Length: 268
Image 1: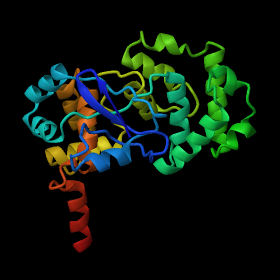
Image 2: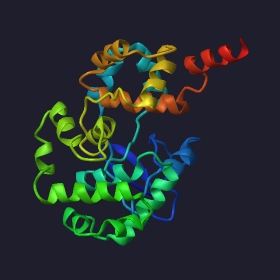
Image 3: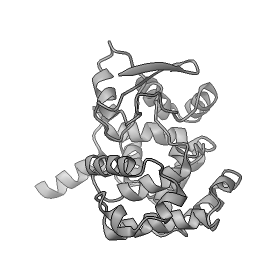
Image 4: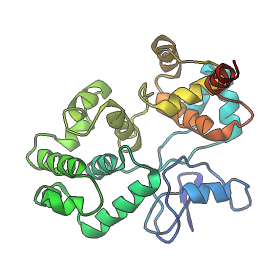
């Protein structure tokens, strides 16, 4: 375990000998009961403090003033330290690797790739045979997506550096043109690589669950979802962090209304 300061925050990370499971990071100390959970959820950082999604008093105060219900959850959960991957190309490749498999399986495959390709660049991967990429444990289709994505970046068909100067809608439009990248994946990249501040993903099931639990809805319609998106804007990405935490059990005394409804149907 390693520790360091990130701005005015205490940030805990793990070295390569610790476990790595993708998840939410909550600010904590060794004496806090959440510390073991935090350690378990920590991602690979090669012994270094990883960059985290940046937010502070401005975003917190805005969201609290906009929504007292969310404010209560935010006070209870505290600051969330969520690692980000600033290298958008690596984040793109990792997102393809991780699709539709467990976090444990994704981490195993990712470590094989990091070991096999010490220099994971568009030039390296676009020049690698699909079969060699597949040997890391991904499907042939994913291996092809990775190679094609690398080729698109190398040829300049996707200018990764220019993405930072585009609007959220323009970024989505650019990224979904890549094979293997859908709207949800593009939005996760916008949050956890580009640190875009105003993303609330309709396609994210955990966001739906967090909204149901926190606001006591049995179902979140698109109209209702848009209402919350407008309420949280322009800091919907920060709200997303807390909704994910709620969905993961941060407010464990609150059951999921959708689950309660399903249970009643079975009894009936």
